[in-house]
Structures are given as structure tokens and as C-alpha cells.
Amino acid sequence: MNAAVLFGLGTMIAWGFWIAFGNVASSTMDPETAAFVSYAAATVVTGIYVVVSDASSVVTNRGMMFAGAAGVAAAVGVVSTFVGVTVGPTSIVSTIGGMYFITAAVIGVIAFGESMTLTKAAGIGLALIAIVVINQ
Image 1 (cartoon, rainbow, N blue to C red):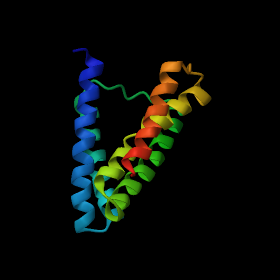
Image 2: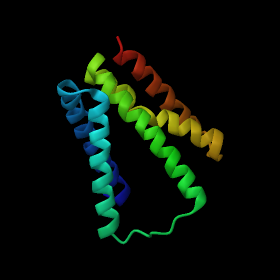
Image 3: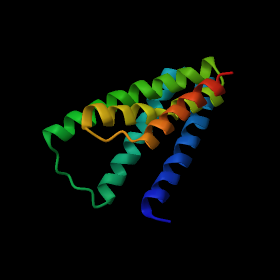
């Protein structure tokens, strides 16, 4: 297995635990507060990782702008998820939320000039069909 596949599996497993634990947290406390605590813990763990790893401390203006925008998007996503699991089934909220790659693919094509192949379009189409099916 190559490194990308291993990191992808790690991502999948970690996000699975995140939403399952977030569901429990959101059912036992205010979901917005649970979302805040979740990301506060994530900030601490990420900060420790940056310090102990060989990560560069070089920061660029463009990088800061996009990292900040990513943080705002993550905040909207985590609050939406934590509130979502209090008003609907985790299976639906997590499945639809897990389709974030559709948004990323469209942004990549429109804003960053990535190519849209027939295979990518088919994958996006199938993902959209999955959203409809999971909501039945």
C-alpha cells in the first residue's frame, strides 16, 4: 500500500470516530459547545504534532489566507454536523457530510483549473445519486 492510501484510510477511520463521538457529545451537551470542545482538542493535538514533527514554521500570506478560510469552512462544517446529528440520524448526516469531496472537486475545477474528466463527472453523479438514495 502506498502512503496516500494509508493516509486516506487513516482519514476515513478518524472521521468515522469523530462523527460517532460527536453524536454522543451532541446528545449529552449543547451541540455548538460540543463542536467547540472538539475543535479545541483538535487544535491542541495538531499544535503538539507540528512541534514534535519536522513541519516547517514558514508562513506565507497566501497560505495564511487559505488556511484561515479552511478554518472558517471547518467551523461551519463541524457545527453543522454536531447540530445535524441532534435533529436527524447520524447515518444520514455523516453520509451526506462525507460527500464533501463533491464540493472540493467542483471548486478544484472552477477555481483552480483542475480538469474535469468523464470519470470524475460520473463519480460526482453517482455520489449525488447516493445522497438521494440515503435520504429515502
